[in-house]
Image (cartoon, rainbow, N blue to C red; front, side, top):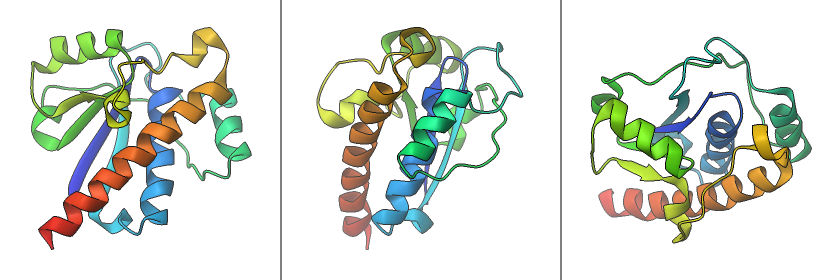
Length: 154
């Protein structure tokens, strides 16, 4: 089983969107039984809160199923518990490394599309559609890579 942790600032917009997009794509690619996917925050600001309503709306509009969510924060033990720890932007990456240390397990989501362009926080940009599109594209590329990895293991 490959364990994936998506991380953003508050765990109410980008990282839960990535979590549920990735779960949907994993099912589409028939690798959902091989993955454990969840999300967390670097901050304490939104702990316990559900997905932000505009993020839920964009998931629904794109037929991505989601469930009740409760924002939580990363802890040092997450470094040992997950195979991939994926941040959304440069600021997230700095905070992740400050909190967990440096590790080859830590990646920025855009790396899976061979770019350095951050997934901007829609809390500030208000562009949830653009954010969704970027996350979907990067997660789709990640899924394709994982399919190859899993095929090579079998």
